[in-house]
Image 1: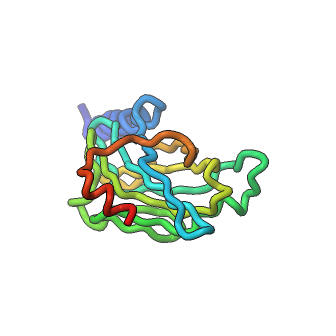
Image 2: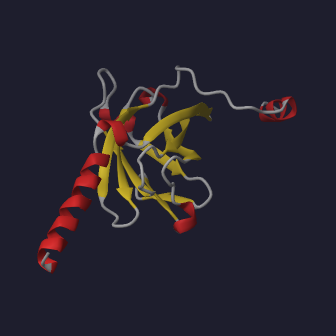
Length: 168
């Protein structure tokens, strides 16, 4: 096989693999883990990132506003603050990225500790999440996520002392 033909075959195989990861069955997942009132005018939404994509590490993702549901005005859905877990940073509105390779979320891994702060009226707003592959920093998947503070969140195991300390 000639080198140019081999290169074309390898390139097509790589593009097919990336495209396969972009379908609905193989996208990362955002899981809401908490919702707290901050002061009297904002809500902090905590979420985890679950990488269900085989063989792809995720090192950054971005968030933008999807169309707000009626009767929520678009300006109520503005992201006020974003926070990141250790090994990650957040800036430029809501663009999270791993500080270095040790923060990459490999296939099958989950990372907790991501947060956004929004206005109370925006807890029913939906946002699009774009996911980027680490090797080539190219978007390979996206989804719409709607956060709701009145829905159940996953329970986490804790000691009674740490629960009491939370509410002192």
